[in-house]
Image (tube, rainbow, N blue to C red; front, side):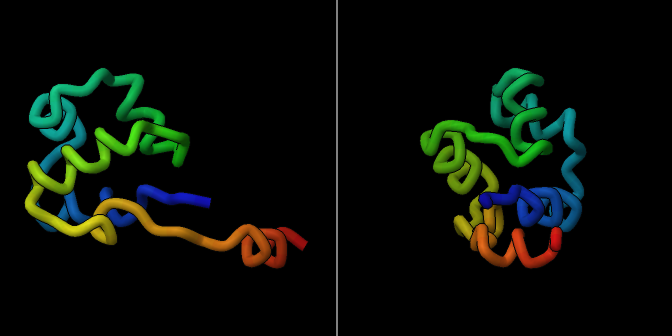
Length: 74
């Protein structure tokens, strides 16, 4: 599973609100909502986020193996 939790931490560290982030990135609120729900968004948007926030990919997303998720739910 891909998680956008690192992005939320990055925004807090940079003191950027979710609304400011949406305006800065010029993305729709529905695209932002997908990120907060850890749903798919285009790689181009992730690349743009890294460029605009001057951060690394690991500051935006993280990967958790599916088998680890399954262990936590059992």
